[in-house]
Image 1 (tube, helix red, strand yellow):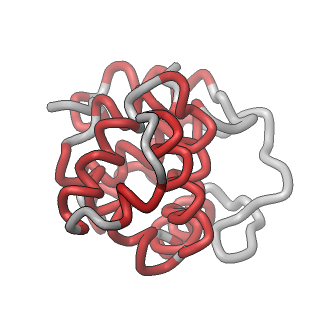
Image 2: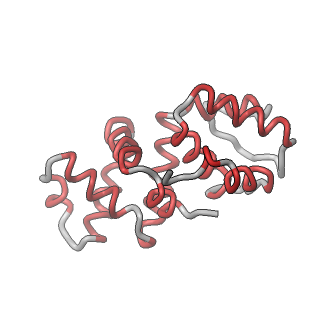
Image 3: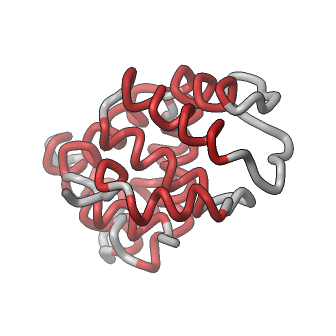
Length: 166
């Protein structure tokens, strides 16, 4: 199991920057909270970060999100990004698993799912979405919420397509 800051540490820098950029565009509240948290972590005023060119600011944020002290912010950022910009992928996955949801968000998850259904759902995601995006989503799905399905954990550990940092 990976924590959110470890997911950021293992994902490609380009995906981390894409997540931050999309959050900047789609969830200004989370973005501003993130800037404030990173500024506090780096012992600078938020204005110092805000005045940096956006590319440089986002690189600083991405590097900072790999630290344990920013775990809560990393979780919030992943959740916001997934729910605001990756709804189609979430919905496709949950539909394939026949799990009730509203725009990719669920109230409660089953204790587990059938191996065949899970494998089919994962293959459907790979057929439609970028490999690393799928890997980050499934890692976050299993490691950061109450799912923690054993068969998904095995897939995350064994399937080379689901390895982050490759």
